[in-house]
Image 1 (spheres, rainbow, N blue to C red):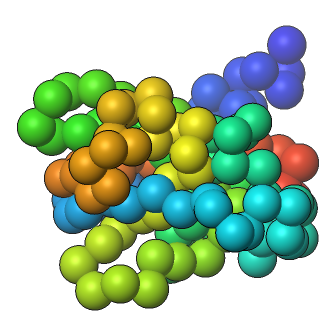
Image 2: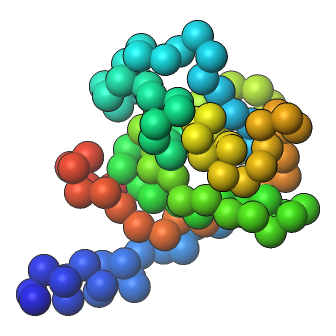
Length: 121
């Protein structure tokens, strides 16, 4: 009970980071390789993403601004390295917001939480 109250309070006090830009997806050729966080990249099994600055373990809601479709992902890698892009999604996450064929989509990225197994965010 105390942990739940602490978690709610910490999330309520956390800054609400919101970014707008373009998302892309990555995966082919990187499967099984270690991500920047050290865990293996599993593009078809996990909804993860790469971000340039957010701490590993940060949970973000990625919403396509042209369709309204959204997905929650955990940041576990660094990137993207293409100018104008704010986040790279795993294939599973990209499939959830229907951007596999498009490759790139306009998005809003909003911090919504943190996964504790990454030593906090």
